[in-house]
Length: 231
Image (tube, rainbow, N blue to C red; front, top):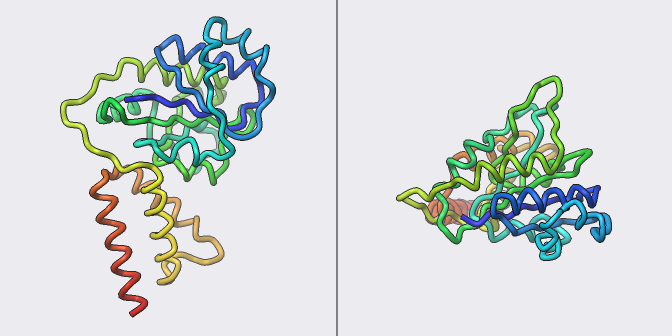
């Protein structure tokens, strides 16, 4: 398993440096930064404290899709505060799931802005969601501390004997696009608010943990239904 830490629009350069230090502490070095961010030099290097090579090698992208499209497992991290649908993973259960990934499979772990987290649109681009169980009276954690906890759990992952070939994230996203369009066409989803139901369907698909063959079969079913409707 290859871990990719993805930071969406980090507000503080010092936090980026501290994230890099946490990653290097546990043997991870692939850092992506999405969208707007403050100048990283020199503050991020000071906070990295020996992990400035991780900051220096960071990759930058304009959209989250660019950072996760080739990943075999995409996980959005979120605070439990104010969520109507709880995250389905913790750092420990994510580590158990990561055991089923192949050596070259990418796990993209996505972290949101320090002050506001991830938007709904960013959350639904990820197959699963994870949060750290914290005191409900003080649930939010510092960005680098959160990264550190996940990296600690994932650093001890041992590969399972039976590894499934997961479908890449961009294929799963194409499946969701086609499924949502089809359900709109047949009237299952409401045109004025299709996300109200489809977000639940996304969560179901995420828990199903589709492999490449399963995603291909579902896309084939959708294509056949589309063809039948048009004929």
